[in-house]
Length: 416
Image (cartoon, rainbow, N blue to C red):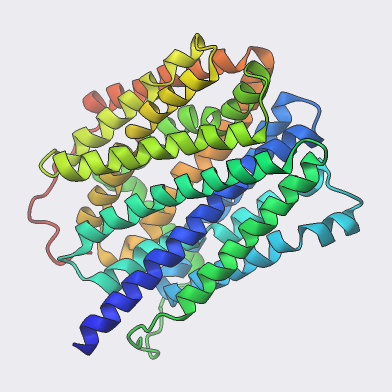
């Protein structure tokens, strides 16, 4: 009975910590993009700011994954939350020392926040099997994915409300105050994680390889394995096409094409998160017997095609309906990818492979953001969405013909 109570307590604490932390993440990105637009003088600078806000995932991903596999994952998550809380809550002090809220300060804060965030998700995905056990893992993966998307809805909805209430007289100061609220969410998440009671680990274990060697080994496994190699390549290409418009293009569309403010941008992103919740529920209800490879690839195709209406949409309300439809197909990619990796990859390599996933998702977002700002400056946000939609859909189409591997039905035994 005690073990069952401990399990429920830990699961509730981890769920709550993730929910609050992801809600904070959702608050940050609209603030970053809008501050970059307010302090910069060109559309491409918005993309540059978002690029630096994701660059650490490219630079540090493999090392962070190797570190997660070698240490206490709960401590990694707590440290990540505390550093992010300290950074965001001290922005007014940093601005006073810097001489005001400038584009350079915004880029620096985004870069440091991403640096502190890099090990958080690999640590969470590695800790979860320890808490849950193999039998309940698929169900709890779905719970974590769905709760993360609900947290995005809450965070973006709260962001839209707060940014709208701040008004336009002190727009930069209002956004900074919202970012401080974001910092407080990380502090609450850290406190919840520290309340978890975990089984004692064997402190006598010593790793025979150095951290960098371990990181290189994880990178080699991820790239050479037919399943993970193909999955990582397709994910990287899809995110290179799709993610920049989702952040940079959306900001430029809402402000430049619809003439609206940061609150409307946050609501736009929140509607996409609503679609993600609906897609997760549909996948959990109807997709249990669908082959995960086809789920991922069809998700990529539809993820791209639902961008194409933005070539001609001129009404903000209609754009919200379309972005909900777009969000429905995102969980097909995310949930399908996570399930494939957990079935196929040995448990002692989970941290390293999930870190590679972070590189392909978040790291490619950095490159996509930089490209999106440049393309939008040369053309328009509408053309940007059209180009991204075509290339995103092509990633799924190419995957149906080029991504070949046999999904081992019994190979998951003995694996996390």
